[in-house]
Amino acid sequence: MTDKERAIENILNFLNNPNDKRLLLKGYDDDAKLRVTLGCLNKEFTKGIIRTNYMADIAYNVNRAFQKKMLPEPIKSTINYRLGSMIVNISSYSRHTKFNPRGNQETFTLFFPVQSVFDNPNRYENFLQELDETNSRKIILLTTNEHSISNWDIENHVDQIYFYDVENDNPELMTNMRNNGAFKKSK
Image (cartoon, rainbow, N blue to C red; front, side, top):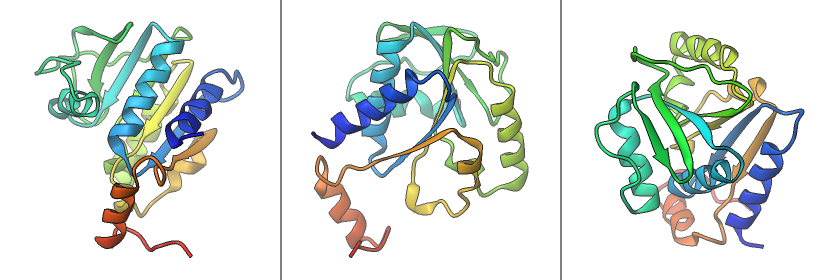
């Protein structure tokens, strides 16, 4: 089984588990995490919400991950966008936007990226409140820049944690990160 297949299996298991609502998805290949997450959500949902920290970056991040134009630029919180077979609303969790949907049992909410709030106590408290006020059936928190995160308290506020390992699928990335000192080589 490839790293990608293992990630898909774990995410789909989470999405189909009626007892768990929040998943923290960690890993070093940000594009792979985003592609797999959106692919799995596309299989299980027709409507969803993407909450991002900077509206100006979300289209770039999605388009880069898929290596094609999936979203237009600029993104506006008052417009719904087609992403695969889903209709999604995109808004900021860190800045004021005109429309901040809370979701319902028919929707997912993907918070991406989330790492910038972890080390700022005020922003982190606001983020936890935002999580508590989200009514979507499933909530996925997607990190980036794993190696720079020092505060992992968020793990206490989710039902599942999955680390998307790409050691086999993308060994070049892992070698480069080790060589650049992003993390220590495991023994």
